Length: 97
Image (cartoon, rainbow, N blue to C red; front, top):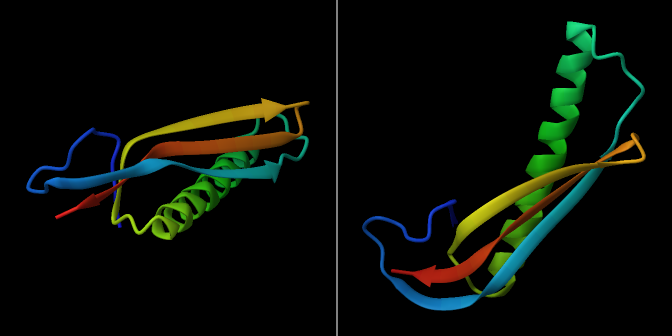
């Protein structure tokens, strides 16, 4: 599956627009001090894991629509109550040739 932040894919023609798809994920954030490089690395790893899970869910949801690409992807990362990372990935599912 092709994933892109752009509205088109060079060398491909959009055959059909199938709808908006999303993928969401959250990870519990431990209490860390940002002064320590090791803690910053752990937080980065947690954020990357949450982002990867959200992208996997996006691809599953796009596949359910028989899409082979997702265009105009945007990623939103939020924190809540200082304890969770929420990642939301949104895009347009399309069929390209």
